[in-house]
Length: 55
Image 1 (cartoon, helix red, strand yellow):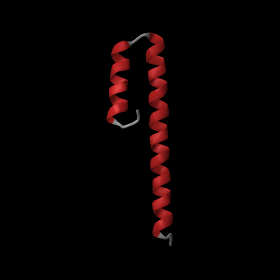
Image 2 (cartoon, one colour):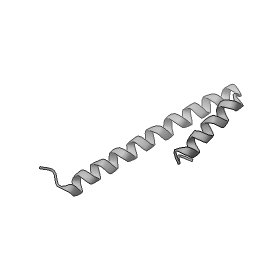
Image 3 (cartoon, helix red, strand yellow):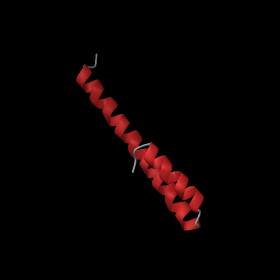
């Protein structure tokens, strides 16, 4: 059986990996929106980043 400390560390690592994935995806979406000059989408994505505490 896995001890609690090891399980907590694995959960923390998974949470960090999830946050990193969200950040990378959002950065890519922002890059595309900027390259297209889509200001409305840029604003929405920046709000999303703020809401998710990614920026």
